[in-house]
Image (cartoon, rainbow, N blue to C red; front, side, top):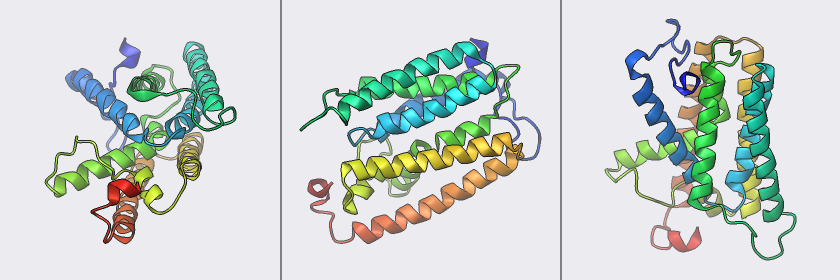
Length: 243
């Protein structure tokens, strides 16, 4: 169990490792619930969550193998095989509709597994993985959810209510098809994850990585806010029908 409790965030602000101490268990619980919900919110287009999760688990498998965590590597590999089978039945073998429906149970299970290995691979004694690396791998659902929490709070609406203001809704409003949305978000997930892996292998300072991540999130917020104003202008009454 000690390997699956978030004891440290690493060195994020040039002041040394941020150790959680007695806050470790409540912070772990909060991070787990938050990550599960972030993944669940991404499941709005057929194949989107499966594709992005496949990329994320592939990165995790690489990191587990690099750290010689064989048990974790084996379990992640099994999850990759399951996702591959799921995607085959939802893309290459389908005619008119997907043959497997993931649902909330599937998306939340994926979110839990991602969080489990995010913590497991960064909190073991002999790990070679920095906690900040997981932020890059998990960037898309984290950006999407955090932006919505901020936006809805500023608008004085309940940030936890379901809505049609996620990234995939914006892309659909812009005219993208479901497959295009899946490809675009998957490519973004791949690129951001690669940044994290390259930064880790290049031994770039964790604090520099974290500040770069925050800067990228700020840019994301400005771009998304501008895009919503651009595409959703004049369409509030029929927005649900469009997306």
